[in-house]
Structures are given as structure tokens and as C-alpha cells.
Image (cartoon, rainbow, N blue to C red; front, side):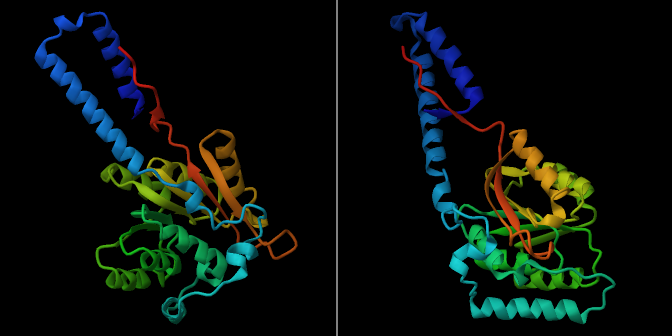
Amino acid sequence: MYVSNQKKAFGKVAWSTLRKQRIEEWPVKGVISILVSIYLLNKESDEKRSSRVDWQKVFDFLPSYNISCSRLFNGNASMPENLKHNLTTLTKMSRNIPSKTREGFTAAYSLPYKAYNRLASEPFIKVICETGFNAGHSTYGWLTSNPKTHVYSFDIGKHNYSKPIADYIASLFPGRFHITWGDSSETLPEFHRLHPDIKCDLIIIDGLHTYSASRDDFYNFMNMASSNNILIMDNYPQQGYLHTLGTVWESAKRKGELFEIYRCDHGHDVNPREFGFSVGRYVIREADVWCEQPRL
């Protein structure tokens, strides 16, 4: 039977108590209550089993024999024409809005972009959370890939083009796109305090790429992660971020807070700004455990 730690402990006490009594001494109402409790536990167990994710199937498209991003999808970087057209529209919008600062965007690297959208399309992905909205290319891809998902984005808003594009995307996907402006080290914990029931199924860390900022994003998102979560660390293991993003990622692995699934880059002989990313899962401490049903 599949029950939580708390229910497991309760079950042991209950069965231990019952074993000390003779069956004829059990009150009828008490027996009925116990049987109903067992039924509800089994029903909950069945629901949990039916909601389990086949992780092998989810990550099957990620090659297990190399770490070159160029090998994703066997190098086939094609995307639907309507998606390419709309991404081009976002790019033109960002370029037509004067801004002192500009950043690159994930969609410029079509193979990793396809990988992100593939993960977002999984049926169990209902809530996507990201730091680093920028020009909205990734956000648009996720909303297009899965018509049932909601995206919660957190961005500091330093680029002049970000807010107009966010308004544009919100108009395309009414009620499904939500953005919070400000320093994510402050806005993420505040959002979690106000909305403790919102749990993130797919999480993308792509905000400020300093050690402290990425560390804060990592642990703030850990508090918001669902039990069936997928975490993406954008731009790691690129050379330029080994001592910032890399320190956060590798430290979490060693502490047992993160289980790595996949990572890729474009090698160590290319421009350090070349795209790379890592995929993993937060280790949820309060996860349910397997136990055997006690016997009378």
C-alpha cells in the first residue's frame, strides 16, 4: 500500500492497538470506522498510483550517450511554421522598442528550444514557473505547446521591451499567463506566501546569472515545486557560468537536493556564450513512501 509517512505511523499504532484486543470486543461502529479508513487509504493509494509519471517515457527523447546539444532530436531543428512566424514577430517587436540593454533568447538555439517545448507538452505539466522573461520567446513556446498549462513568470523588468511584449502575450493567452515584475529574490518568496497552493510542475531558472541570484531562485523555487517536478537550469554547463550557475547546481546534487537527468553544451572549444542547459528534478523530502500493510 502506498501511504505517507504520517499515515504509515498512524497505521502502525492503530493495527498494534487492534491486535491487543479480541475481535468480539470491538464495537460495531469502531469496526466500521476502521474499515472505512482502510478503504479511503486504499482509494487514495489508487489515485496516487494513477497519477504517477512514467519518467523514462518523459525523458526518453534526451540522448543518454552524449552531452552535445547538437545531437538533440538527431540534429533536426525544424519547428512548425506558425511557431516560427510568431517567434519572429516577438523578435521584431523587441527590436523596434528602444532599450539600453538587450539579451539573446532561447529560441535562437532551436534544438534546446524544442527540448524545452517537448517537456512543456507533457500532460501532467499544468503550471510552469520561470525566472527571466526577457522577450517572451520561451514563454510563448510553452503556452503554445500545452493548451492546458499556466505560466508564472518572474522578471526584474530592466529591458524596455519586456513589459509591452508581456502585455501582448497576455492578450494572446487570456488567463493563462501571469507575470510578476521585480527582483526575484524578493518576489518569489512573497508570491509563495500569498499563493501557497500554486505548485510548479516545470521550473526554468534563467534570471540573473550570478551565484547569489541563481542560488536564491533555486531554493525559492524548491519551496514551490510539485512532487512531479522538472527543473531546467538554463545556460549551464556553459564555460562562462561554471562558477556561478554550476556552483549552485553541483552543490545541490551533492547535498541530495537535486537529481540530475541530463545536461548538454556545445563543447569547450567554442564561444563560452554558446547555449547549454541542464535538466533535473528537485528531491522532495516529504515524498510518500512504500510500506507494507500491517497484518492482524
